Length: 456
Image (cartoon, rainbow, N blue to C red; front, side, top):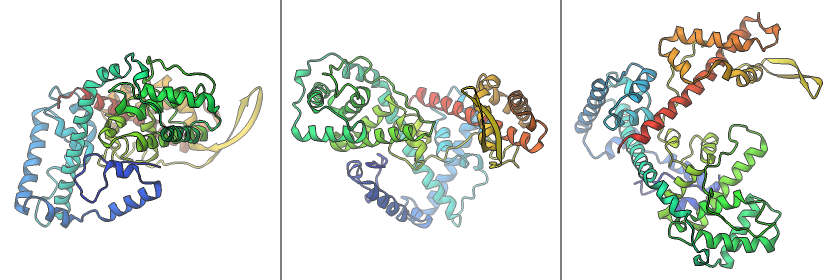
């Protein structure tokens, strides 16, 4: 997707720097990723390249396992399954001490629950290499967490300095070359219909504003991005006077509805931000710009949803779930209560009343059910913790909660389906999926709170 950057914390000499990666076009970047994938070391190579001999490595792994097990036992954290583990971990008072447990959980969810089962012998090359990868990923995770934590501590005072009143006249004059670049980016990604007289004058004002203080200069790409998107209709119609108030307030874009207009807008804005970084960001300021961008908009999250291998945005607490080293997915058991159900493509014909007219439509069974669940979910699930609280009591309790909620929503469904066993079974499965998804989001929020308040 246009200009990209790789993980910041990188010691591999064959990997490009952040600035070099930003200069790649999409085709070059994909070729680079393929090459990097081909060059990934084998298990044997990882072990040979490790800074310890086999016996030392085996002892290190045993010590690591003992440390995790002791941490869990001393803090009453269950290692029986993911659900009980994360609930106990989030409730601990010793967050800093238990941080290695969280790092291991996010980087390799299954590892920590199999400490006694993982064979640690010279012949078990796969397990030895798995530990080395886990250790590297945990180090990445903890480095990023520390960076984010440090930035968060100074963020409010930094932004206050960015937005304080200043004399715009102190800003830099806009060169013709930079003006041309800014104009092209706006036309390409925001609006192609501009009045050049107003627009050129506004560009000069925007540039002076964005370069007028020491705090603004490093985050120039973010300021330009926000002004372009916030005042896009005014840049060609009036002389813009930028007021500092609310300039960097959080902006939530539509990221969960996949219609073409939303997708195209989000894609254009992401591309524009990358191009602004490519043109106007020094390498030393790149992490800061990515961090600010993720603080001020949910477009980074939208980008993660489009590309699970994305490593561009990894400077918010939420993004630590969605990086190349994270194996985080769900805290629930892998098998569904309604395990025999699966996605259904059976056609459902129904009548929809619109503008006083009845129109017959046909959609898949999944779409039909999901529509009712989405519309009436809040009637049966007042709090995401409701399902979590039932689930922790046992799977039978969770099943009863699902079926009772499904029955409440089924009353809105066409009566022809009320006696269809397979439809009801599938409805329950869709209900369970919805509850799990919302509850997983709640657990992620709680993990973020854990990371926010842990002292690193």
